[in-house]
Image (cartoon, rainbow over all chains, first blue to last red; front, top):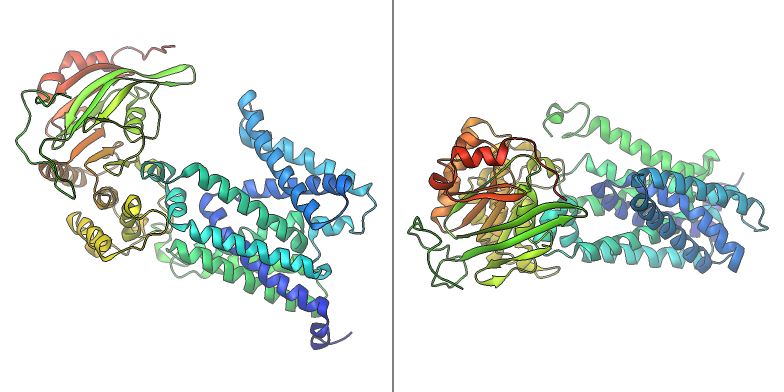
Length: 282
Length: 264
């Protein structure tokens, strides 16, 4: 087995390393929004519905970054808007409608992908394959990260008021609907970028765990965004170097490392940890 | 628009002068306001008029439309018919001059924000998305914190406050917003006796400096003493006027007794 330095000399390893940093950071950054919005479960639903979108896109247009991107966005919209439509036109609530819609869509996606003749194995769609990234993948990841960070930073002031209390935000003149659309678009984009790295099942972890960890450590919402980004990047980096000598899958290692950070914060956080006296109050 | 006093009990006072030149009392007038939620009529033909320097209790049973009325005054719910006139102009969207303070239960107290951060939110109408937070803004926030006696607590996370302090933090946010009108949803709920008395003293100070307070309220024992006017509703208007005139046994009975009808 070659040493880690030999491995790092390979362009493929450098690309994977960069991808870990970029995707880890952008997902960690967006995770602050997901945690404050309390929409972790919804993200799980949407990420699962990306799979059938990809499958249909591959079926129609062949496999490319753009077809994957549009397929994913399309599927997220269908499930997101479809569940709203179903709940309005029946006696079901939106969560129930979403639960039925996304599992059905996910299962259909599995069937389509199984019967498609594509390079990528099913496992890679489900659990990601960061090692297989090309230069163009890296550029897309970079572009998406930049869009996410710039958008959420530019909108930070109205966004934080909206996340704190939507009614106060609206009464202060915050453009609530615009924020909803903008943040939805950013979330989908970042999810798609993480799909390649960690797959559609584990992507929820990457988009929730970093800020969930920082949430236990800070009372500053801005720290949540940048801290989430840094933690996401650091966790992915650590996972990258752990996974090689151990022979583990990079994507699973990323999520396990981030989950471990979360557990540590939960137990040892000075203010909001298990051993903190003020826990009940705070 | 008529400039005649609302009724003969108009108090002698000056309007709150924070950043606004005015020669007359700022008047809030609601005319035949009706709001419908899908098939259910939430409010029907509510009409009243009041002005800066007064406090008004919004009284009625659960589901009578108190929160709906507050939200529509705050510009959060559109009226189906009727109008809201503020300083003689129709109120079409949110204005920094009206501040909305939600019920305690609607707030996520674990949100990572300090008292100061909450009060600074009040500067948003002035700052917009990007404008630099200036020394002027900082001074206004400082004054709001001081007047609500929160100076020493400004760096605390909002859950690390008592109920009364939390209520004062939200009022401080409204002051930082330079609001003339404070729309409060059940401000006394969940406060212990001393905190309630403190809040009622603050109400008097706020109206004395010329602000208009409109609060939904459920404790019938404390209407007198805390408020100048009362609006009794149960979807439709039961009575409006100074507490001594309108808050009568008959009117209270008309608002509360017997089941609330479902009016379609």
